[in-house]
Amino acid sequence: MEPVIEVRSVYKSFKGVHAVNGVDLEISGGGFTALLGPNGAGKTTLVEMIEGIQKPDRGEILINGMQWKGNEESLRHIIGLSLQETRFIDKLSVREILRLFASFFDLGKKRVSEILELVGLESKSRSWVGNLSGGQRQRLALGIALLNSPKVLLLDEPTTGLDPNARREIWSILLDLKKRAETSLVLTTHYMEEAEKLCDHIMIMDRGEVLREGGLDQLLAEDEREKIIEFTLDAPGLPKDAIAGDAPFPIEWDSSNGKGRVALDNIETQMPVFFDFLRHKNLHMKNMECRKKTLDDLFTEMTGRRLHE
Image 1 (cartoon, rainbow, N blue to C red):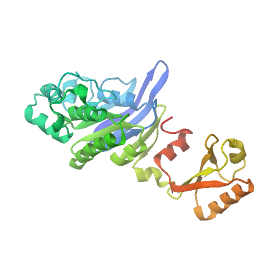
Image 2: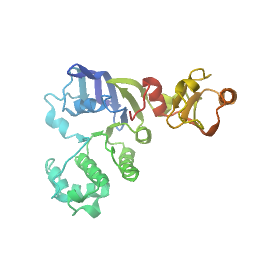
Image 3: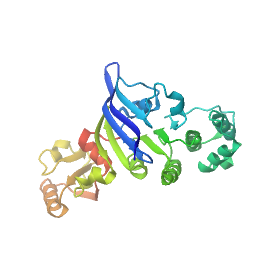
């Protein structure tokens, strides 16, 4: 399929800081792509350039084969977007807000009713926006982004600050949208689970660059045998050098709570070595959990820090 979004060697700097540093991105029709990374990774700047809010210093961005310059009106009719924070007039009802935005696209009451059903706000249609919960306001923002049945949907951290239930309500709406395969999505997030749940293609970003990209299975394929061991020792306050300095494997150690983690390629052969090391150090394990490597682990290996740092 022809790509709906093409980002070619795009750069953007602010006062000498490289916010986006040579990023390439291609999304085909119906594709759901996550830009995954911590705050300051360059995700929002990249999306704002795709939205036409920012202009690249260098590089090219095409949406449906068109550049923003000279095609602003056409592109605005095929794009839906929701920014990190959306402010509404508190003394208007949910239905009134939707009718206002629908009027920008010459859409009538029928489309407003369809959106109310789509985002699950029928029962709140007459409620003032100022009385909505955080999750309901985000569903309203998503509904506004979907009013014009966009070919391209751009969501900038749509679930940040929401409780788990509200976050899953947003996910449910997006998963239903994904089944229809009519809209391409670019989603920025620092939630690993969100990227895994919603998107077929994941781009891990940090400091303006794409560190790795691909499907979830593809990203983790190189380390599919590796397992993460998380453990707690009866030794809070133990200095990092006391356990990590001469360990047979690299160990991450948090001395404040006596917790550590180690990655092992072969559980059968390496776990006995690890246990022997602890016995030699006269360290006693309180509990242990073994799990597969995640995107968060992969990000930590590539950057030395976690997604939420």
